[in-house]
Amino acid sequence: MSQKQAMYYGLAAVLCWSTVATAFKLSLVHLSPTQLILLASVTSWLFVTVMLAIQGKFTDLFQQTRQTYIASFLYGLLNPTLYYLLLFTAYDLLPAQEAQAINYSWAIVMSFLAVPLLGQKLTRSDILAAVICYLGVLVIATRGNVLGLEFANLQGVLFAVISTVVWSLYWILNRRDNRDALLGLCLNFTFAVPLIAVYAWWSGELQGLDSTIHWQAWVGGVYVGLFEMGIAFVLWLQAMKRATNTSRIANLIFVSPFLSLVLIATFLHEPILPSTVVGLVLILGGLVLQQRYSTK
Image 1: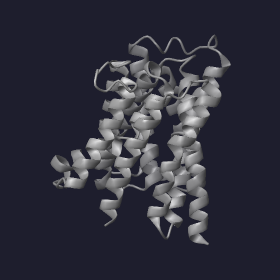
Image 2: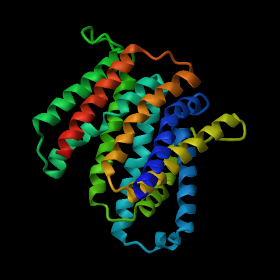
Image 3: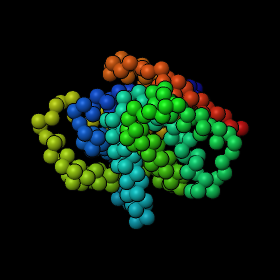
C-alpha cells in the first residue's frame, strides 16, 4: 500500500512538472524572466511557509545556527535565484519544446561535476551517456542540421545549458545539507526573495510590476510558484518518503517530457519538430544508460 501511495504522489508531481514548460512560455508573454521569477518565488515562499506552519515547524526558521543561515543564503543564490533567471531567459529565447528538452541533460552534467567536487570517477558508461545526451542537445539546438552546425538560437541554448550546470551544482552541494527538506527550501526562498527583488529594482523591472500589468501575468507567476517550486516539491517528497522501491518512483520522471510536448503542442500551438523528438529520445536514452549502470 505504501508503494502504491508513493506512485500516486509521484505521478501527481510529474503531472505538475509536465505543465510548467507551457506555463513558463505563457507567462513570459506578459512578464520578463526577472519579473516571473520574483512573482513565482514570493508565491512559493508563502506556500512553503504555510506548509511549515501546518507541520508545526515555523519557529524552526528562527532557531538555526549562523552556519545554517550562511549555507541557506548560498543555496538560495543558486536556486531559485541564478538557476531560474537562466532557465526563464532560455525559455524567453527558445521554443518551449527545445528549452525543456535541453533541461533534462542536467543529470549528465552532475556526473561530470561530481569528479572534481566529490572525488568520484567517470566510467565508460558515464562518458558514453554524456556523448549520447549532448548529441541530443546538438540535434535540438541545430534543429537537425548537425553537420552544418547552424544553431537556431545559440544564445538561448547557452542559457539552457548553463542553467543545467547551476542546477547540478546545487544538488551536489545538497549532498552535504542536513537541514529538514521543507525547512531548507523555505530558508532558501527567505534569502532568495530579497536578492531577486533587489536585482529587479536594479534592472528597472520592479517598476513594471504594478496594477497595469495584465491579470494573466499574475496568474502565471502564481501558477509557476505553486506548481513548479512548491506543490510538486512537496508531492515528490511524500512519494520518496513512502516508496519501498525508489527507482520505480524515479523512473516516473521519464514520462514528464513527452507529456510536456503534448501540452506544448496543444496550448502553445508549437509544431513539434522531428529534431526535438529525436534529440529528446537521445537525451533520455543517455540518462537511462547512466541510471542502469548506477543501479548495477
